[in-house]
Image (cartoon, rainbow, N blue to C red; front, side):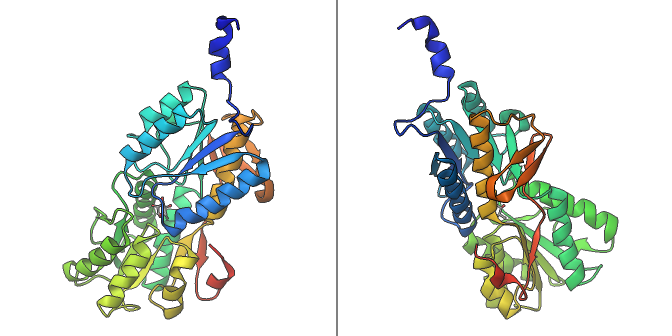
Amino acid sequence: MNLKILPLLLSLPVLSLSGAIKIGVMPKITGIEYFNAVERGAKAAGVELGVEVVFDGPVTNDVAKQSALVETWIARRFDAICIAPNDADAIAPALRKARARGIKVVTYDSDAQPAARELFVNQATTAAIGKAMIDSVARNVGPEARYIILTGSLTAANQNNWMEEMEKYRRQHFPKMENLSPTAKVTDEDQALATQVAIDSLKAYPNLQAIVAITSVALPGAAEGLMKAGVGGRIFLTGLSTPRSMSPYVKSGVVPEVVLWSPEDLGYLTVQAAVQLVRKEITSGSRELAAGKLGTKAIVNREVLLGVPLIFTKANIDDYNF
Ligand code: RAM
């Protein structure tokens, strides 16, 4: 073989032994219903597109472990790596290394530094998600509600962006509403920790009227905490989680409203975008993406938008199966 063409051969997408394109999809953390739903959607897209989808990630929201797995997928010559980073900055060196090896990099759910990836698949605009949660508090408690926020980790781009939008929207539309703890309570994707933080917050803020829990495990965790403290349904609780996780709390009235989107559709759209980048059917400069069963999705400034936030209540929560 003429060794001069070796660099060219090494830069080409490698078809694995199965001959299929190989896509890695990584959550912030495995073993929680939200990312289990992402996995279902991602694998459904893989079957539809005839590609191999490997779904794997850390058992805690640890960006160092995410970086190590990216390195492994680089060594295994994946064709694309899709990731929801626990830290937008810390993950960037590993993602840049993947791109330098010709691997397509797509973030979803939570972004990395934009220069470290081709596309970001966003579930809804951060402004729409922030607005939906503040509107829920205003609708159920009133325009002068006193609330706190339970977040995941303080390095997660999506939660931080949502909180920034919540505060901007609150200042503009509900200036008398008060966040009693501008530094959000950290619950680190740990449901049991969220339960304890909710209980502790009731003592720390005796005039508390509402809690907004913005990770899919913090919301059920906080519901358990309010119930343990005997104030379920008396302190307004809302936030982001799946209908499967929240159905009993919504039906009992502990959590009257839940905001989210379809994590299954998010996973499906992410793999659609990644495969079409690998197959050169789209580029990061494309303006839209024909995303199979989801129809055509807009791409604006390298961000693919899934849709708008959904509000789950007693009236509709049984209509959803994720
Ligand atoms: C957790 C994660 C994820 C977020 C959901 C709402 O599962 O923080 O990034 O989108 O909550």
